[in-house]
Image (cartoon, rainbow, N blue to C red):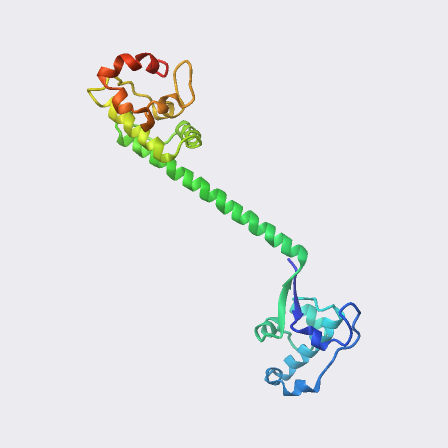
Length: 234
């Protein structure tokens, strides 16, 4: 990326309008009374005055490069542009094309951060689901397989993590309750995305959402009312 700089308040040095090629600049005697300039070493003063002339020739847009500037103003001592920036005589500027590039780069970087953040957040949710499943003593899985990851990712598009965790909790209570007639144990993957010949999407988890009232519906005395419905998902 090419960096440029300009003279601050350069208009006060110009005799003609900015739309004309400047062949000379104003050089006021009041410069002798400028304390900021007076404090500069003689060689730096010469550099600054030479840069003023160069700015007039370059429409106040000069490459921020010490060697380039030294050559253009015929300096015999080292030019230190950063020192002039720090002293507030010149200021950095960015070319329009470079500005667009920086904006694009920044945008892509932020997008990458968002993508990474989303990926990390999703992994955290899947771990929460996995840990809740094993804690519920249904079927204990030793690791989060690709199948579980895909199933959990798909289910998270349909339900919130709180709804999923609550459904797992309800399922664990039902299959481990002697007063419940339903004891079939799915794997986590099948619980999340469905199973059985009809393969109804999310058919299994739907039965254990709070809104389905599973803790009541799966009691032995309710067996006749739900037997046919459940057989579709096993």
